[in-house]
Length: 350
Image 1 (cartoon, rainbow, N blue to C red):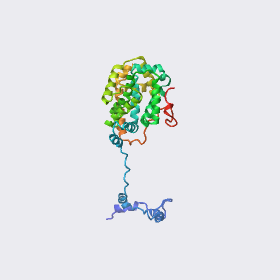
Image 2: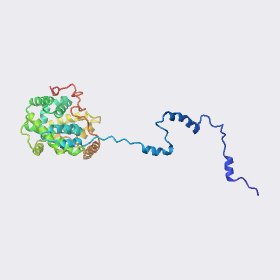
Image 3: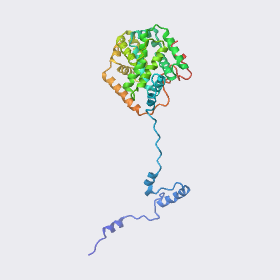
Image 4: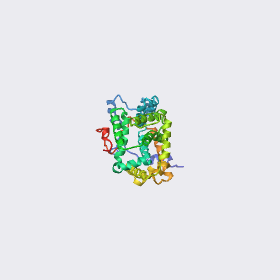
């Protein structure tokens, strides 16, 4: 009985055959590629081709470089903890405010100055001088840069002494109560501390708290401010009692407070109403009442505080600063490039 071709025979017979001399033009065989590459391999005997079968073994055998060491995020804290807050307070302040918390110190001192305008005797004096109405940005820059000079260079350095002379000259024009001067000094101590307790990327050390106290106490002595307490807790108690007694609404509070809000709003591209509400949301209830501002919804303040805490978590993982940021604050608009080309005597109202 006759049988047809097997299944294997059918598969073989139906497959098209390609004659060796009818290859597609422009295509190269593996052998041709190998011949082209062979001379290059001979020219580089130090780097022979890696056989495919041993490529993974070769890669595993390559020497691994040591990782680049990351900067020590807590080296400055250990340095501060090794210092004495009484004798080394200038160095502690410079490292803490210039390297560890520069952004936080600037923001907290902005709110510290803002807080002093809740006192009618202080806001009334500023309203009478007209400084905030005519040049709010310059007054902000003068205050920030003069205080930064003291921290950056030391209050007994030539620039520090010159900055103190400017401060004393400006204050000497007016009859300012000693308690008002002492209160403003206390805000420079405790407002940054309280801010950093809430929003700092790490907790403050005891040396940093006491260092700030002794630093500004020494500055106060050079400004002839009398009866500054010798004890950290006693000075804080004075500040709290003063605020409870003096924070009351007055028209000049609102006037100077609004000038300050307008200044803050000018720094940001957001609509003025949005920025203004965002700033007021970070004020405590006593400040809002003393200024006569409309309190924003509670959720806005809660959102901003959470955002500041989130920022602290991010900053915690950033490398430490290599250069201080004190006198070179980019928000300084009045004296471009300061301190290059400027002296502290160039600051202040004329």
